Image (cartoon, rainbow, N blue to C red; front, side):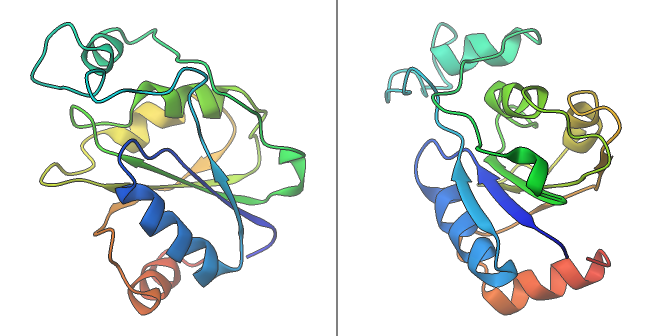
Length: 159
C-alpha cells in the first residue's frame, strides 16, 4: 500500500478510536487534525443555531485553522482521512486539512463515524479540496470496527 497516513479529526474521541485501530491495521502513521482553537461542548451543540460547529457548517467557505501541520506529507502515497459526520458531510476542518497540502497523485480514503447519518456526498465535496488526488468513496463505520472488518474494507477497495 506504500507509505500510509491515517489522519483524523475527532471532536469527542469516537473517531479517534477507529483511526487508531485503522493505523494499526495498515501499519500507517497516525496524525490528529487538531483545531488551533479547541472545540468546547458549547461549540459542538448542533441544536444551537449559533454554536461554532453550526455556524462553520452553514458557511461553505469556513476553514477552521489547524494547530500543527503534518511533517513531510510528500512521503505518503495513501492518506486515510477520518471524521465524524456533521450535517451529512465532513466537518470544515477536514477541508482545511486537505487544502493545506498538494495531494495530487495520492489516494485519499475518507472514513467516518456517525450515530445515524451516512456519508452523503462527502467524497464529492472532498474531491474539490484535493485536486489531482484519487478520492475513493469512503465508508461510514462503527468506532469499534475490528481489524478484520477494516482489512476486509481495505481489500474491497483494492488497496
